Length: 474
Image 1 (cartoon, rainbow, N blue to C red):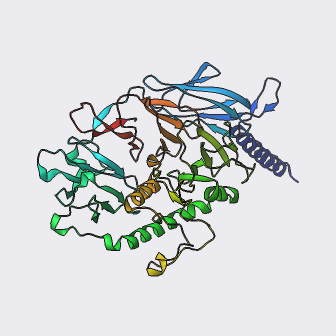
Image 2: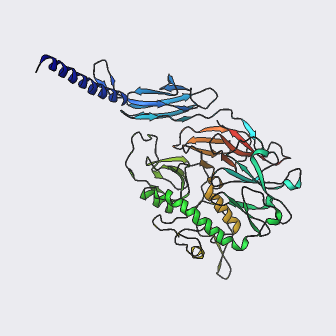
């Protein structure tokens, strides 16, 4: 081999070695490995300190270290992380940093002084949110002109400025149709409203247009068929969510829990236990950089929990919510002749799982055969009045009707109403803050679809009807 060829070979081998070694070092550096004073490479973990909004101070073990958004290399271990920004509640959490993995804070910061904006100006009676979360139906009974009294729908996907721009009337109150005294619920696809009046009449109204009094039709005769069609539609929506659960949690969902509400992204489940049980470990293979917050796999009756479907983690939300009792036999009284009669008991709405078995196929077609097919899916209308059926449908759509806990639109937080105000907390039970403590209707608190606001009713004067207001969070 000539001298020139040998030089070219050495240059080629040196270049290849440099590229290989450099690539390995870059990869190891990206994985968090850093050189030490002794010359050895030490594995570290990455802390992605991010916040919404950004530009907040990051404290690590009580020391101001950086600002969001930034990524830091830290030795593996447990750290006390605090994120603070003027005008916002502090965010604090104990995080475990693992070698070669990225741990994110994802800190949502909520303002300490949120602003209020009116959404309606002529009162809002009996507000009911739609299943898709984009609308709220309510009645008006104190408008200056009688023609303005009736049923309204406010669209939450529009700018919440004034009622004239965001709410529209869909029906007018009359002597025969008193909407203020009526109860109503939405169709599962949020396109219609079913209204039950005190006089026994029932009407089905389109939610996006006005229905003149002369066009209103009583649908009482076909109500059972309408209920059944809606139940089947809800069962079809519910079945794929249940199919994502591990087998053990699927059995819990249909036997040991009630009031189950999946998060908007479908990856977490808010539920209330109606029996004590223990969730086995490792129902699914563990994911890298899973949550390291304290779990509650021993579940107690009456408690509210969140189960993370992707990370197989179960967290206690609160034991302070008044539990909704599990279905039980109606109380009875014994007569003098020895016979027993049922006693009236208060009706408690709850969300019922309409799919008793995820492996049981649902009817493919709607029709008369479906009405009698109760083995395929449970029904909301058996043994209850139409008014109670409406309450059950509303409970299917929102946990607001059964408890003080509901999902925040980002699927990472829970909204809680208490006697002192409105709280927001992370789904793992950490960072609970009171975002509003002024006057409000604890029976109606609902998040704006993008999480920018909360909607509630406020009555500032005893001589007026409560109006809808937005509480700005972003």
